[in-house]
Length: 80
Image 1 (cartoon, rainbow, N blue to C red):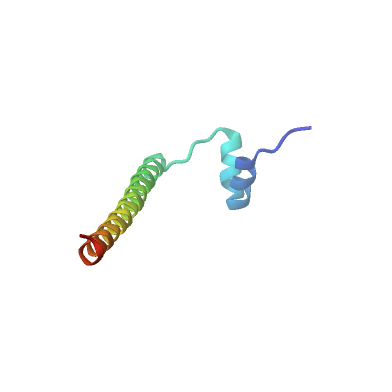
Image 2: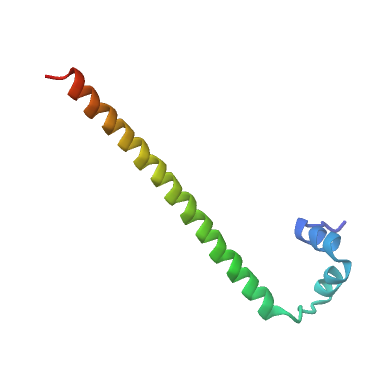
């Protein structure tokens, strides 16, 4: 019995002809466009990651500033 892997199933469900071409060993004619799309998605993923990291840093800096403000005000009103 032959095992069906997930990528074959996904390709077949998306496009039966693409699945058949792949099984015949025929490469897609738009390899350049596919490579460009992969690169675009890689760059986009990096930008999303950096954006999330910068947002986290921003929130941490805001929290640190609020804590510092609270400490300064507490010491000013209740300190010596």
